[in-house]
Length: 240
Image (cartoon, rainbow, N blue to C red):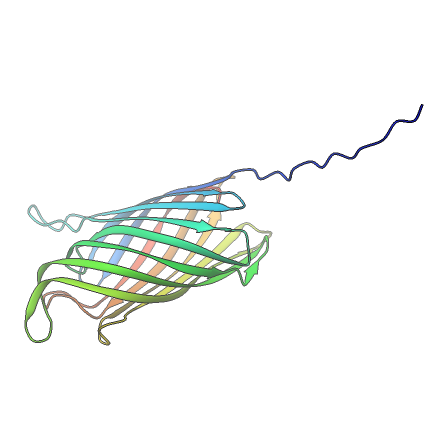
């Protein structure tokens, strides 16, 4: 009796990768606010082979006096297609308020492309290109041509990168990020932000961190400065 042997092909496993970050930073700001504040941040990343989701929420808290506070809120979501590929696409959107820039409401949404130029256990570098529609409502009127307005709508082209490097036996992490945003309809409407941080673990998922953030926005109300510099020192609970 002869029996035929058949090979069964096992489907490739595609586990859900979950990463998270919860951090709190004590900060000192120079620019629109020469004061101490706290920045509290939460991030959740969900990733499979075909689709990935990144949800981010950040809240800045600071009291200037009994009547004025510098509280700010920043939330965003990004959904990426084939996030593990060298080249991947994404759609993104968000909402934010900014005391530093005099923005009561800023909403945006768009799409982009990311490039995993370097992706190893110790080094990551990902440039990206993003195109968005943006709606701004300011607390005070801004100067436009030929008059003033509280509302500004525009399309933006964005270029930037995210980077991460692990040194000292993969314990210390150095992260650097940069983003330049240019209005596609107004040449003098642009802004950019850059940051660098160093993180060192106390235990497996609990770390201390320090960093620096620099921001510049060319279109703001006349009562606001265009640039701010922020030094941070805090702790983070993360498996990123």
